[in-house]
Image 1 (cartoon, helix red, strand yellow):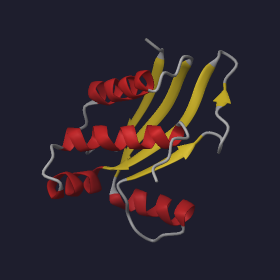
Image 2: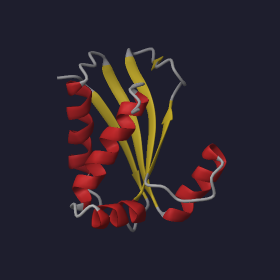
Image 3: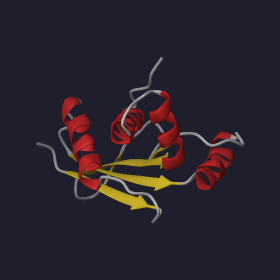
Image 4: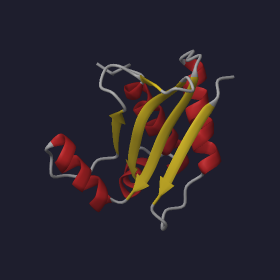
Length: 128
């Protein structure tokens, strides 16, 4: 199993399952057969912060459920200790709750789905 370091930052009012998030990252990394050690950061924020990021980086004045920021567009960054630094995933928790309700899913399942989606982007595997 690949060594995976998941840095998780959560705005204090949101209750998330850190262990489950780490397991989702590990499962996605293993399924994509990434051999080197990997590091990724995940931030769970509110709609206001997400709208700010969306405006700044996407030019859209709206909230969204997820944004992913690759450490290096196109080329992954290899740290001196051979850890592959993928980048950052930001999730809007209020948007996740709305999406989960709309899709009749558990919030934790929606978080898993979005983290996997964001990781695929960071790995350079984009949806068509």
